[in-house]
View 1 (cartoon, rainbow, N blue to C red):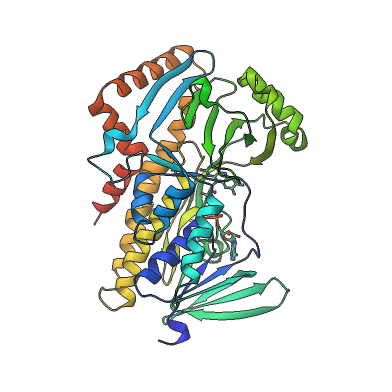
View 2 (cartoon, rainbow, N blue to C red):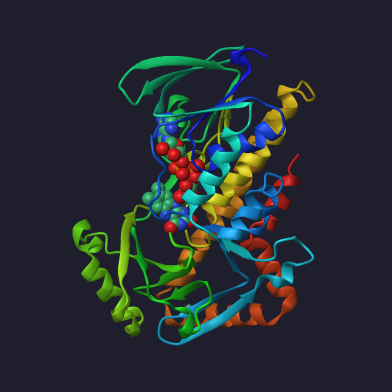
Length: 403
Ligand SMILES: Cc1cc2nc3c(=O)[nH]c(=O)nc-3n(C[C@H](O)[C@H](O)[C@H](O)COP(=O)(O)OP(=O)(O)OC[C@H]3O[C@@H](n4cnc5c(N)ncnc54)[C@H](O)[C@@H]3O)c2cc1C
């Protein structure tokens, strides 16, 4: 093996680290290039669906997630004024998966678990403080230009490059790949609170409908592992950022939702823009896109990060075969066909529908949606079909059926 046989991975977030984990497990040498010197530990994704737990099982990450995370067997649709609408029990997926539940644990902990394992592999090099600033490819390989944290520049050569460098992907831009879709006018506010929603009957993951102030509520382990809750709310596009992030105003917003929360503490607020976009190609020659570099979506349903893990798994499986000379290069086009098709048909469609359900303004439509949810939850066969889709199993099966 020489240095230029390596697979270069731009970005050491969930998708990039997962790609490194899955490739080294298949005997492929990787170099991970991560711009940041320190982990991103602000509140981001925190939900892992059954297929992700299956994919991470062999590495031991799934076992560690179980030690540190929260198992969420049921999740709920609620109405802000009426309370519980329907509860879905993921246990009906027992015939379909070894993990018939959601597991909740903060994203930065998952990344650290994966990075520890990647860094322990003799096949891996992980470089922090290395920003991919330019990409050139030819018939034999890829050369990336690096901007180091100290301001110096150098370059690195590899056989292939995976752009897992997030929604603003420099790799995607370097290849002139369009990122089609739209941006929602409102940003989402995430409030982390010590208030315990469980005694009010909330499951560890809940979606609360309201035409003005819908909310997603879920429990994560928190730094001490004892559990803390996050609430996601929409915001007025005209509202000023400092006001939205202000802890006292966040406490008012929470108190309007759950009056008993006054005595609790707001421990964090963050605000982020929400987009629905899919790259027009996932492969350009020796360059691939995975994770948020390839698709972005709203967080309702907890699908974005999981989808990036599934991209990494699909790509690693194919790239390892090609790298070892066991399959033709054309196998890599299947990655683009399968993953891009289901990003449109499942990831985008489901997350847009989730948002529309929560914010439905037409009272008659809202009642119809609630009746539909109750009927689905009450019928085990319908519940299973619905949960196969929302737990991301159906999308993976659909991807596997694309030649
Ligand atoms: C602020 C914020 C809040 C979020 N909140 C939620 C949430 O509440 N719920 C939810 O489900 N999802 C949330 N998400 C989305 C979720 O975090 C992403 O889907 C997930 O992180 C995608 O993983 P990724 O590895 O594809 O990209 P990222 O996590 O963005 O990782 C990309 C990595 O690449 C690095 N990088 C970027 N550019 C370069 C470069 N040029 N060279 C080298 N390295 C580079 C970055 O430092 C980063 O570590 C949030 C995202 C953000 C940004």
